[in-house]
Length: 249
Image (cartoon, one colour):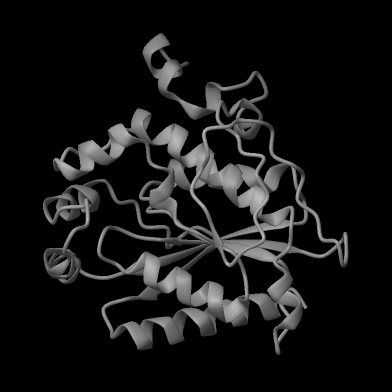
């Protein structure tokens, strides 16, 4: 049984339908539909997200690709490259952090579980919203792929990934995939130190590794060694994603 304090900070207590109905309990679900190559950050308006569908084939599978890993692993670069490869919309997960979350991270204060719930929910709802309007560019791809969206999210813990997985429970056509970018802490620390103007400081790398629960044993996770050059990492990611898509043909 959860204590009162635990219940107030748990995303699974958002509704009375346990435990995977978190989507219905979001206070900040997004209804905005996105058709451009990059999905804009959340607006101040709130409403219920639409059910994803494909105008070309209502029964087609839809894929949400979540690029994950600690700070410095190259989530944004890889996700943008994958979105370009698949001709899909792209969502930058950091855009959905609240101002207070950003202030904490810029001051090297690790986020708590409670800090992350609304962020994860909003990001999940944005991904579903992006699926409601398939990108028109996908129809022009020389190698057609199922409709979908690519997003970044550190998703460091198993339960954080579970929040994203809720997107598939009410939508059988949606498949969630986590692309985990793995590298030694020293490598990521060096990369973050070389960044200029980014709110995430190098001291946050260690705190993220302390809480990291690698998704190696999770059936919907694809792990990639990201200690190589950006071009090689992108090649590996694009290849493994194409392999995964072939399984649905």
